[in-house]
Image 1 (tube, rainbow, N blue to C red):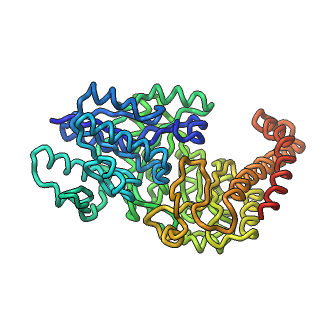
Image 2 (spheres, rainbow, N blue to C red):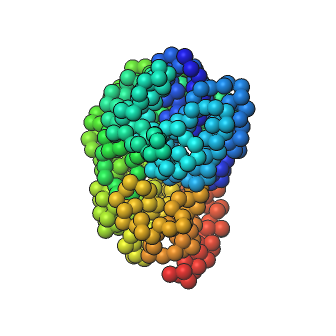
Image 3 (tube, one colour):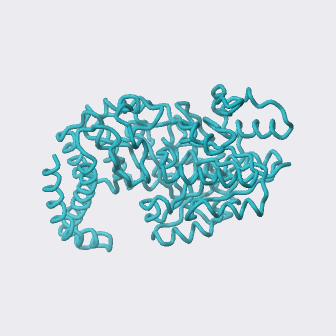
Length: 483
């Protein structure tokens, strides 16, 4: 059967903020698609762009492999691809160009091509896959191989007689266990491990236990997996973990679900399956504060090896949370954070500034929450309008020359918010400084009470107070001038 070269369009080196972290993850969504096509008899290879400088290297791979199909299949589990960064879009356009020069039929499946398929056709793409892509891709290539009509296949966009045709929507896959394990063998795991060594963190691989999210946060884009929520069985995930531990010696994982463990009793059953398989792991997740408070979820997370939970706190203003259709309460952020800490699980906050109607008082509430709860980490962004979301519809008239960030550290306001881009960039730095300052002061007080608890991390945190205290004062003064 014909050769397929799989690739994707995320390059960590084209996103300086992410590359600086030195914690790259393989393109999991791409590996799922490659695994399914290989299981069905196709010869597959992978051109993994994650650790590369630019798209030009694909030329040599195409010359060597001579594939019939170039499938640029982005990792839908990587939130960075949902941001549709222009650096990655341009890289994808270049890959399409090179693919066509090498006589490939080019198929693209990504959040950005779903939203902007016209631009991809202009660059030479033959097909765009919208929504969950594995089954659509298999049906499309099967049809092309035997020269059968593909026009009724759900989930594809194609050109015919210079007209763009959009197929009906593909229903999402409900039984995820039907999919073979991702094609991990196509990845150069050693290369990833070498990068992770530079981060000082234990090597970690990404696993997805679910697809989709049933919640209605009005700024969150879901062009691939949608609002339907489906989960792998705990047995499937434990089998994958056992394979990765035995094959590659990996025992730490990033559960990259939008929301981990939403299905009732899933976390509890996952813990039971790990114990039955005698597997000891550490992992970290994303979740919701209201979900964490249900039943004995936090207890089961702790027993199964969860070391850190990232929650979408977003804001300490109930007015802003309600405007976002977040569906959570500020008091739940406080309660869940305290419970996680009581079980020795680190808690980290995603924070979002700049949402419509945000005032100085709302910003102050959020900073106060960070100082009071002292999360172990924070990630800060400004509200970012993504096509297909209700939030985008509210602000689309403001989007003119620029509608996407260049990279994930761009931080430019894309619409008319309460304050300027310069203000929010400065605010990001200020909140980080206040966050580090509160950690250092807390550690200093604890050390004075109990010197025996002194360790290198706490000493480092305390020492940095000499920088963060005066720096926060200066940044606070600069923010006032920008108000």
